[in-house]
Amino acid sequence: MNKNKHKIKVFIILVIFFNYSSFLNSEIIILSGCKNLKDSFIKNEYIIDLKKSLMIRNYIYDNKTLKKYKITDLSVRKKNSIEYFIYEDNGFFLTDKIGYPQFYTQLVFKKNESNIQIKTVINDVEGISKLSTCNKVEFFEEES
Image 1 (cartoon, rainbow, N blue to C red):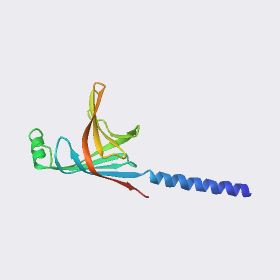
Image 2: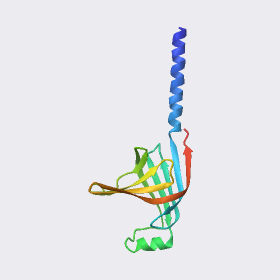
Image 3: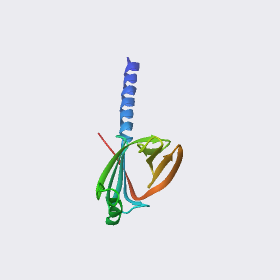
């Protein structure tokens, strides 16, 4: 009888431990004050929700960059928000492929870095270059 009680206690402790550790893995990473190497922004931030596998980019173009893009695309707005699904591969977080199959791009993040890279693939030839450097990286644990 004592043996069974001990087994039940161990089981309950293990269940609590695994549930608690899954809460710790549900993180939100916010990269803010991001300086783009090509364009300039009033606001440029990335919110990465690891639990939802989602990356949200909020940005506001400055007037010079807005003018540059408005010349070729009248649908460009000064303030915008974009959402992409993300997945993890070898310690990197990558957004969905855009423009697949012969040519596509993806944003690439590493958990503890302030740099954002862009991966470009043309006919199976891959290139990765730096896109932005963020001034502030914050980690938040989401609790339920």
